Length: 371
Image (cartoon, rainbow, N blue to C red; front, side):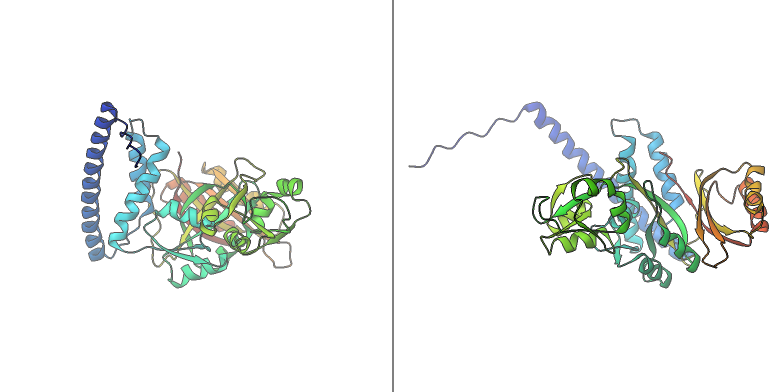
């Protein structure tokens, strides 16, 4: 004899009414987004006639800034940018597909940074190394590349900085990502781990945790954190350090979450492209200008290099040195300045700085997120 069917729980009338209203708002939002998409298609046609590019980072930054400033509802200001980046990404894809290169395979923080900056409506081009990201973007196989340039724990990503010297790419945008490292493994246990596989930067950022919890495990550097996760998915003796995205991608347990030594660990990524395919972004009102310079090896040379900045009131937000590998104890200096070359003070400072430098290369001017 079949069991009697239990009556369905009654839905609260207030909740039902709210759901109906939400459904109506969703339908209205969808209609408005489609109207925006149709306008974006018209913009795309105008751009094709003019021969202008589809992606303008300063324009998108201005749109998001305006929306943040006008936000008066319960929606958090920090939620505005991700929502509209996705909308703009979907609309931009109707104009032309955007191919973006980054350090792969699937599940890397570089992939996460690319999706966060461009939105998910892109053609993903995963690469095996930073060198391949620069090469792929330089040759036009990708429209843009996304590469890490600085970490709050370990400092600069040296290989990325070195590649700016040998390729024609320049920076048109940046994005910063909170980096949470997780220990991933097929077995949900810390026992019998023989080696931990990860990018050298990740191994360094988790040094203290690994020394305390896995002091006898080999630390095996690999091309990317996602590659470490992939290897861990093939061998129970291995563990990887990677993102939560990578754990889902490769079917791994999060054996230990957030093992990075710095709880506020962040990585800054640069968005690069070829100057023949993308113009320098116009001033957005909150911009960064990046350059690399060198000076003659003489007393006071570095001081002389900084004088034009002080004289014109231009602030410097980053100053890093890298060996020139000339054998003469010479260095390249990577500098970030606040402002845009269209501003008279910045233009004057750059002109005088160029005059006192033995080598001068503008790496790019781009809008930064000030919120």
